[in-house]
Amino acid sequence: MDDFADRTRREVLAAVAGFSLGGTLTSSAFGQGIARPEEPVLVAYFSRTGNTRVVAGLIQRAFGADMFEIVPANPYPDEYLATVEQARQERDKGVEPPLKAKVPDIARYATVFLGLPIWGETAPPLIRSFLSSHDLSAKALLPFITHGGYGLGNSERVIARHAPRAQLRPAFTMQADQERQTMDRVNAWLGNRLAKPR
Image 1: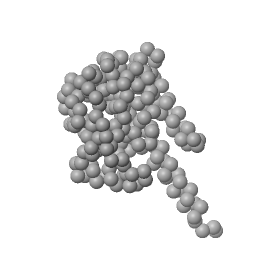
Image 2: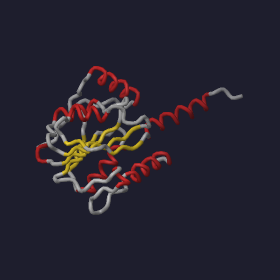
Image 3: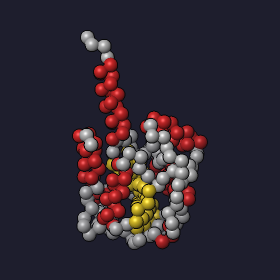
Image 4: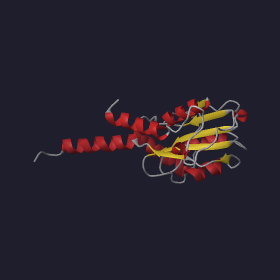
């Protein structure tokens, strides 16, 4: 792993280092801090680059929660810009792409941590699919959101609209822009290398 990727992983870990061994989140991790969630706990997440997955793993370990990775039935392209374009088209058309799998027995969970990155200033279409496919009525729903520097956009409204009967709690958010910064850095480097020497 290069220095940039190492630094980004350390920043993600540091941002959620407020987990105590007793399982309580401190104010440094989730803003105002929350008490231990009602059990059983599920951590459901979608992650393209791994940033959201790191946060999901820390939450899972802190609470001894079950983990569920949200995966599309048809994978997104490996190439970043192709994924961006596909997600934009899905967003604009209101598409909810099919899930590879659903959470078995979602009814048994009292608390759901929902992890997602921001795509195009909103929640990825796959998150809408997850929320529409699972009844979260009366469950505590705690989003944790990573973004590339542009903020949350309308993601919290999307979550609220697609899980109207959940007890939605304030989201934990952090900037984790490894992929975009990597792309920008490589393009800048290539631009400098391809420029004609003076």
